[in-house]
Image 1 (cartoon, helix red, strand yellow):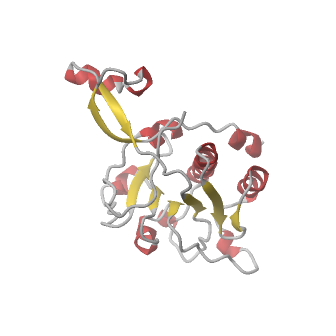
Image 2 (tube, rainbow, N blue to C red):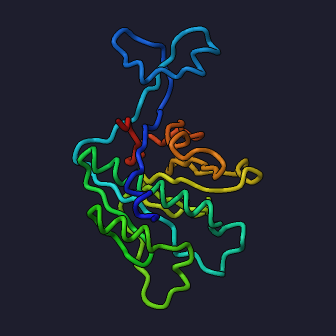
Length: 213
């Protein structure tokens, strides 16, 4: 069951940068690959959420046939994005953040059961579903999408996770305001969420990932 898989999602963290090891650093934070290359220990420096900060995990599900195939979800990428949404939602809960999930049909929902139900029922083309779609929230988002161009319309301080083919990833330009990270279907989700964004966040960025323990 998809809902059971989402409930078991367990993130490990997201790295801001690497720095030399200092006495007292947790061994869990050592980045072994880089340490081996440099011949000295390097540890991951992690971004942290501010206590009490609110966050909206938003899944871009309002796509319809107006978008060409290159800008729509494929099944595997969408499944990974749904898992990522659950991972980030439950991490935010662990950090005692005010967190909600948004999809085009449900709008913003809160609570573990409601979020799991929404993610289990969501699909990538909710723009084709009869009825009124919910407007996207105006506060900073963690925006999960297959469309890199959609990052330019996000609220200030948002962060985008963009699922796009490797052959088009070189053209990815999130801009100065919105932090962006390219996601790849053929790579483990947890490992990708631990990587530092290929584009450093703006100094105005209000949405940050942190250590997930």
